[in-house]
Image (cartoon, rainbow, N blue to C red; front, side, top):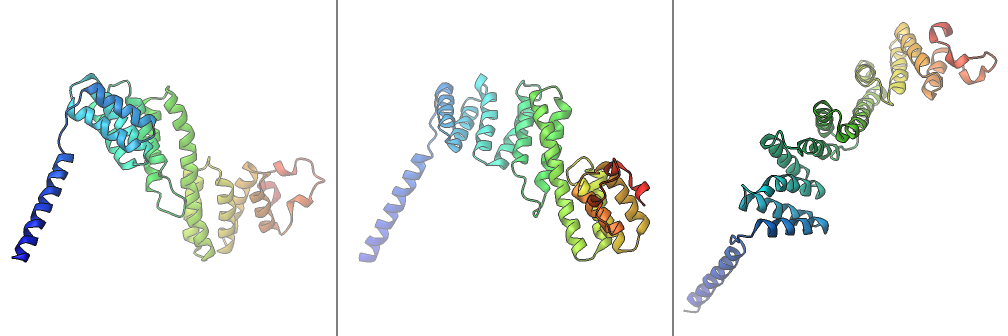
Length: 268
């Protein structure tokens, strides 16, 4: 009898909990102004997850209102601010697909690019987000070249390409240390050919000089050193390559005017 009573009490308690849960999930219809204002208040208070929820409710409860379209974009923006980048990107792609001609669509493309850009990790990790960020940033520039979003995107493209070049350099140095010279050369050549305007190019040319020298390709080493000397005559990498190829320190020669501007073809 006692067991039965306990079992009955447990059922009653479970039923009470279930009723409470259902009550919490109960659909409450609110006016579009109420929902949108609550979303904006949450956003201003930096309660981004709550803001996203109320913006989504605007669209769910009032899909044909004038505010529904704006709420779609604001929900994605709230997720972006909450660092929920995957949710933000999904929302932005949906907005772009549904409203390709909307005046806020350029911003949606830009915010999507930022959502990838801010996921860029250090060069020791996978660079998939970096590749996606680069593609998304180029989309902004290609589609809306005269907007303020394109101006910022161009700056971020340069930084993104520099980051990708840094990844190639990191792998190339790894192979160079392990004396896997062909693999290292392929990485350094990739930097020079694909990311030649980045800050990593001078080092890539020097590392090529090192790798070619190590496997006995003197002419290739000279050619890499010549390009380095011609384009980056005052860099530390130029000094290191000159020392490697000649056994001398270029900084000790101070008598000849314009020494740093001479091409390597004249040096060798």
